Length: 48
Image 1 (cartoon, rainbow, N blue to C red):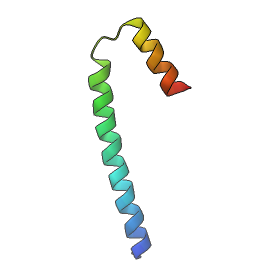
Image 2: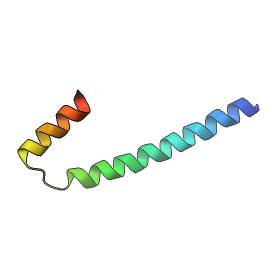
Image 3: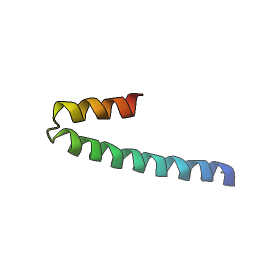
């Protein structure tokens, strides 16, 4: 394997770990109740 391939695989592993962390955080957040205005605001922020 080339050094470049190994670097890319390491980046992918880090991105996958970050994705799992964010998914866990999202699951935790979605298990809590938000009031309607807060939900609308967050949707606007994240969806543009």
